[in-house]
Image 1 (cartoon, protein in one colour):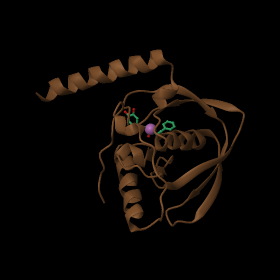
Image 2 (cartoon, rainbow, N blue to C red):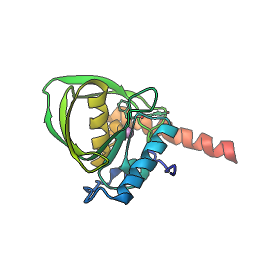
Image 3 (cartoon, rainbow, N blue to C red):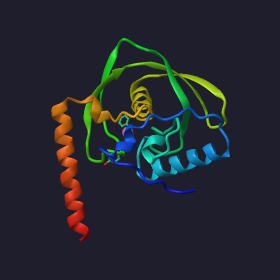
Image 4 (cartoon, rainbow, N blue to C red):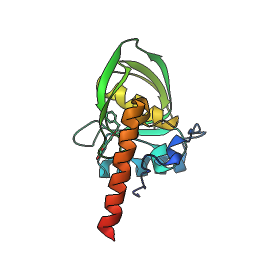
Length: 172
Ligand code: QAP
Ligand code: CO
């Protein structure tokens, strides 16, 4: 068990495109376990391997309050998305303190491998649908703030740079 270091926007490594997992072996199971622990510790509801600088297509999600409903999605593929759109206020462990509304498909159908390497298909709506789409974006090198207007993005970059300066001052 290990806590992994989470990359923060605008780290260029968040723009790497993750590669498909070839085999759900002991190494991937260890990665899943470490990612789950890192997400629970934060705490967060979703984490993609990209965020811990591992560029393989692995996602962990747990929407439960009790942190006892872990979902593992390996090589996820959205095979259907509704025309209907929903707006949700998103956040991200890689962009702490920033929340904003993002529009995405309301419902999706997703194929993936679970932590045992078994093929699964689920239909998701509501927060689960938002979370899966947000995490698949990470695997494709995209952070949710990059779905906001360029004005909002530039304000977020300024805010993060200021937070960083204040942190640097606090420890010196
Ligand atoms: C992605 O995000 C998500 O700013 C998961 O200070 C979020 O777990 C999908 C977090 C919302 C759908 C809707 C963010 C923790 C956690 C912060 C997270 C923070 C501390 C974000
Ligand atoms: Co995120």
